[in-house]
Image (tube, rainbow over all chains, first blue to last red; front, side):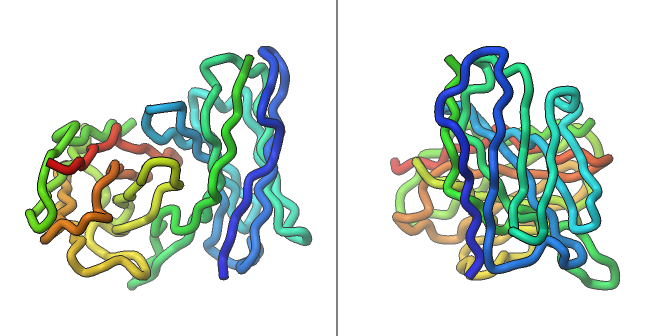
Length: 125
Length: 108
């Protein structure tokens, strides 16, 4: 059974740094092709991708937030950590971590975010 | 960067009816990287379709995806009560994951 769970503070003050941890089970982030991403959703709004880290330590960031984000992984304890600096009220959102997995035919492609955590509501105030 | 536009913004239908949701890309999209998600209130999104037309594990066959180039469609052949919610398309290109603004499918 694959599960992901986000943890971190529920309330952050403006200018502070947010640290969120995604603890997962049922898969290993050392498996070729897999990744874990962070995606957020402001109240009543659409999904907004933030960052992803792959099994081979490659990282990708949303260009608009790249200067504020850092994503790391600890494969030995099945955790991915996101830090976001200089938090502002506009960063108030539910933050999800999600697994990114591939599918292969003659080549391999990203199959999308197939497992998600329940989300963590982060309020900046 | 590719921008995804979804239409309609809101779709009001009754159970048993057919739903057709559209996702349009601002540039030609790689269908191998086009996915659809369903989200119900208070829940995380659920992957429905990947590669534009492949159903994810456990997704009923009343859900189907199609399209290529700039136009993609999610079709629900006969709506069940549990199908109402918000649907998002998503694409990956040039190291960037993009979500559409969503279509809300509501009970008429």
